[in-house]
Length: 373
Image (cartoon, rainbow, N blue to C red; front, side):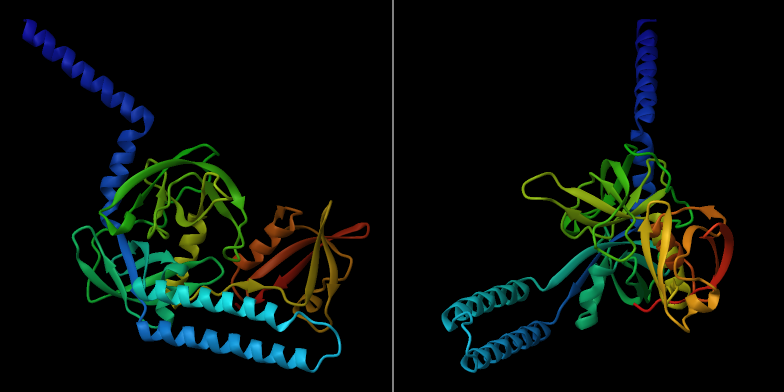
């Protein structure tokens, strides 16, 4: 009886622990990690050393051309200009910095990042991870089992920073559903990421959402999620999840001012999914734009400061002095939101703009053009 009583207490304690862990999200985190870690890959691009040396020589040649032009300017001028010695100090500093950068890149000519599978043939990553592949060098993808896969660039959306890789000669069995996303979690919500730090096996890390709609001048679609997730070398491009396994976004960059704590920024999952599916289907994400119009944010709306003659904006009926107060059925007087809405559209999409013109309120239909990168 004593043993049975003890066993009963042990089982009750175990159930209590499981309930407590589930309440804290630990069990959900474990489930998410177990389910998705096989879909997380390391990405590396080795830049050929002759490309590094060639770029170095080009930079040195440009610097010497600047020096020669400055010397000619000084020798032909009748006004006092910064002396030769000062310029030589500046030139020598830049030359040393370029030499140091070249030596660092020759010693470590591999760029590392992370990617995650979204279907049997494609990986999503951050564009800066594979930008170096455009100057030469193969993209190599590896998993927890040291399986090495070849990949090529399917396409890049420079507006959002999302890139898609196509796997060559293999099929991916585990992947993340881009349609299962969570973009409306409140600030301070518990989140997690699966990373492969320093190309080690996949590891879970947790944190919380610190804010939405942050701007960093990283890419042109500035709608980042601020978090306190750690970001180790080689992990840009890692996916971020809610504890229940919904995709929140993709790790983009880390920012720290001086010696203060770092903030990590995440590209939201709706932007990731939108860019990724477009690239998978057509190789690129074409974006809408309204050319021939200058806008200014004012207190009660978006002021149309100027409309160029014979432009798409003019043909739509927009006039200088119009006040934009909403678009496509949504009352929103914020210029950034309007610009994002246009960029989210595709060429030839129709956008209905609500305008206040003097005492009149009317609707103007604009056909989106094509945004040139």
